[in-house]
Image (cartoon, rainbow, N blue to C red; front, side, top):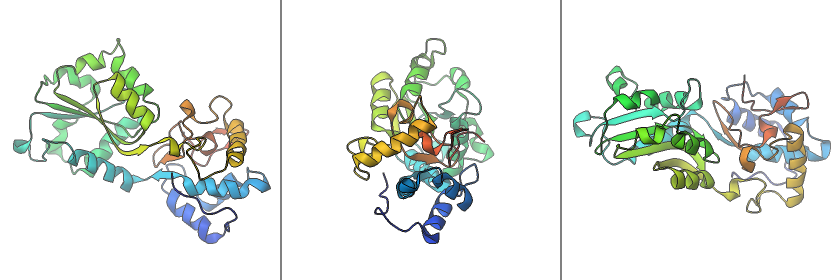
Length: 278
């Protein structure tokens, strides 16, 4: 987790401009007025706390996503952009199984990041449903792509779902990797324990990235209680984010539901700065 400015730091034009530049690429417009409106939902005594929460947001824009995907592909032994120099056959697919989910947009970002968006590389990129027709074997590699995993539950369920037989479908493939921009240690462990996937996150989030964890030292226990009060207003069912992850992660294209709800909830009692839906 990023370090916030010290308590009592001025909430001046310079600080506001920094947030504006940092978050401006979000899919829904984040501007100085929307930032000020978000802070205005906090009591006067908690406005400084709200500002420090904005300081610690981990925002992954296009540059960070592309860097993560270049790093991941570069780490995979046997890959080469020239087909004659690759070890075995390679295929890339979105981890998500339904159109419109984050994996689809991430597949495109992966192609652009690694200069694989040309027509001559089209055959490398397939849908999950196409995997059965690829006749891949023990010398081949399948790379599945997504942006984030907070608990690992969705990946594990998809892999072990008897109706889709996803895991069985790839049983004969020599290497199956899951490339993520970021994931929690908890999610990585669950995926490794319950699947045969090789998990490759560019950024691993630990207990210290959970705002409500004792290992998060940027905020006092009293401040965490005050934050939780607002989070309960934003979401009664998941006040600490889905899976109690307590994260402050925001992607340019969407905010994970594992992030604390004061950043993304939208209803009559609260308006998040980074709504999950347009």
